[in-house]
View (cartoon, rainbow, N blue to C red):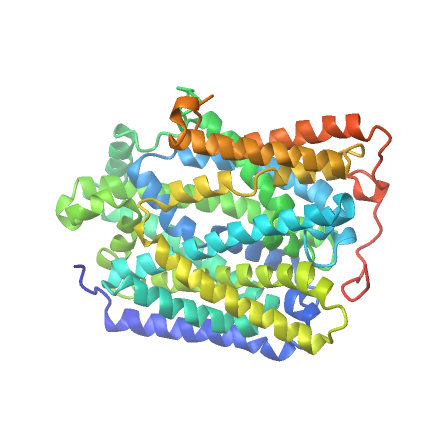
Length: 515
């Protein structure tokens, strides 16, 4: 069992920062008097702050722990998927911001209802709810894993305590508290990564040059793999996975789309996208490099790392934070991770609350006053947080969260990106054609997943890497949905204002208007 390595100074820093974050969230409590303010604030947050918040929301503790773990176990090839990010950012800033800011009040899935009907909206928001429950649980688990690796404290107790604290902070904070706390955590994430890399480089025997050369010789900085097959995780599959993953983030993820609405102008929202994209790319490089360097750091100093941790890569960086960094610095980085995770969880909980409120409650309880609506939204956050805690406890048996998270994203939400693309870029795709495409997609994804798992091995048609499945699902939705629309509804044409390239009015204040 790992003994606690925290000093009194570390504990004081952690407690002080924890109190500060809770205070910051509670500071905005007095502003949360209605659902509009709770989910959208005053819609005048500066673009740079929205960008930092968006960056921190997407990154979280998954990057802090899982990416170093993946690089420690293998190499830097997972980093290839971020190369497509600038293209996705351009698409979002050029085409999506104006469309969403003019056509939705709060929920990203309101667009799907306007374009394809209520079933499309339900399909989209259920996929979001499933994916983000998993994401929140993974984030909470990874934070607790980190603290457990540093202190030796029981991981289940940590999940429970951190989860309760986060739920309480989120319950009152609203989107404004979330954004400004994420601004702080974004700076801390960047600073923590830079400090870690510098410490590794300059405390390694022989210095930075020896560390880098040994890491290169061990092939730990390998970025490309051109030995293409449909089953291995090569550079080609990672590039296409990145295209599918990042476009889906910018097009259909409520935590991202919600931030398009927070800035006072389209220009501010576009600025936020580019700031977040640059920071995401930088942080991926930084934290995957940490994992590769840690492999060399411990290989040439084997006595520093317990041998049992070599086979649990997600625990290596947490152990390094607690046992190699000096007193005080450990407390600062651990505080940054704690604040980052709590802020990201707050963002996801707030987005989940906005979806359940706008997509369901607001439709079923139209005559409720704003006090009742705000009460329901907060109860939703509370229930979602409790479920997240239990799911995080179930994640403790997973070996590599990087692999698990990528597989999960590839399988869930089949066809969502294809559905948005059909709606945004084509006028001839009809609801009937889309639903046929989605039916084919669901069947194909289930078949490929079951086939790859070996459950129906004797009937296997093709064996592919799991990361291809999400992209294949979106392609099927695009092709089948469009062609079926031409056949079944040859005279169909969508409303011009719902298609990219058509003129849009300035962003209206429609939160309290009827649809």
